[in-house]
Image (cartoon, rainbow, N blue to C red; front, side):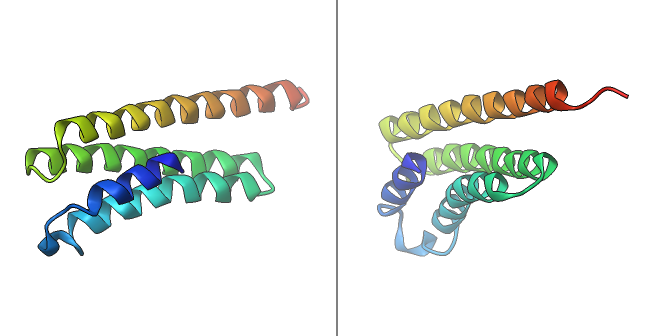
Length: 113
């Protein structure tokens, strides 16, 4: 959720004509990451959880791309861009670790046939 807050704060400074363009795309992608993690965790089946984590990871990749675009357009300063990309890298590692742990747990708890 810290990533969402960072993105919202970064997009507050975007030009007015980007309010419904890149700024909105960035915000949606960031919110989608947190929302899909939460929704997946609330599901009854591990497969659903892993599916939502995969969607969250896709949104994370969208966000990284959009931050790079915003940087090239001069909408985000280098320091803020680096800060957000650092958070996306951290979130990516956390998502990968969680997915790995869930898959491992499912293999150790699944009866062999």
